[in-house]
Length: 170
Image (cartoon, rainbow, N blue to C red; front, side, top):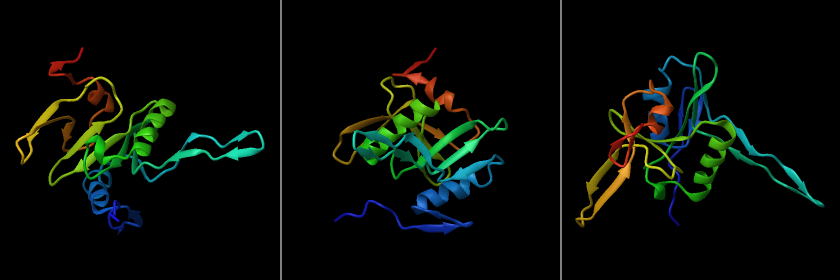
């Protein structure tokens, strides 16, 4: 059976699910100068009664939530090994959509690399982020839509108002 989870990493009193998650924390969250939380829990759907039985609620624990000076959520980050849809399971994608619907802010899927990170908003039906393409070893061209960032000093709205299919958004 394949292990889909990374090795747990302890840093600054937190336990991270992977080295990538710990490295994103160390490089971008820890020194951001803003209030943040690591692995807070949000209720997406409450527990409810269905006749004689109770149905469990649905919860989401993002990796990081960063707050602005006004206390409002600025960023909700979920660190993954890749930003493609196949790198995120269907239940996580559903939680991202439910979170956005309930709390009014999208989850930013991030993949940290050596000196920058890729960030993508999953679940949109409109391509709002810049298109990047690469050629696989077999010669197939793969297109994906994401932004590249070197800090968390940006507004999530910028990711949603960016390029659309190669044309600047209005």
